[in-house]
Image 1 (cartoon, rainbow, N blue to C red):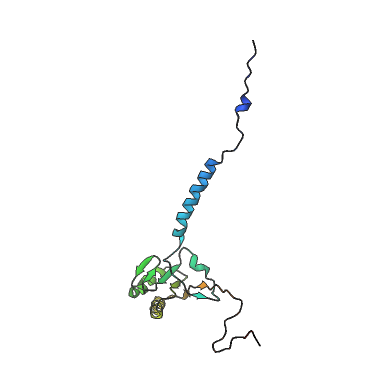
Image 2 (cartoon, rainbow, N blue to C red):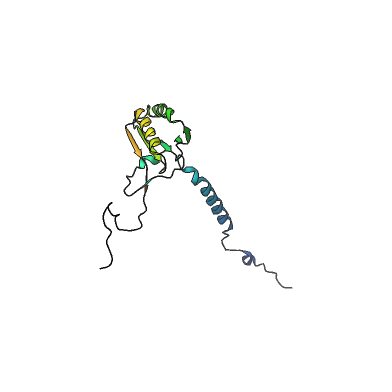
Length: 158
């Protein structure tokens, strides 16, 4: 009769199972992809592009007052569409309790100049101390500055 020995150590698996970790990471990735577009404040506007924009970090704050002027003349206060003639009263209500009376305007680059001026006039009538016009940085493809109007372009030949 032989003695039966049990080899329990042969059944142990010391490899790490990464499948649950991959599942959790995939779920987190999907959640972040869905939530990130919702974090943008206000409506989407194609801002004017300038060479030297001034940085306005206060426009990204939670309590910043953003007025958007769309290319078709619609005006939004935050995410709510509003008539231009009601803008003065709405902004008066919102800035009356604040010490920092600052409003930021996001105007579409193809919006009519008259509608932007009308919005600026109504915001100023509400007693706003500072008004910020938000723009984007222009992507400059060449290092050469643009030629002055009426200036001759340099020639390459003799």
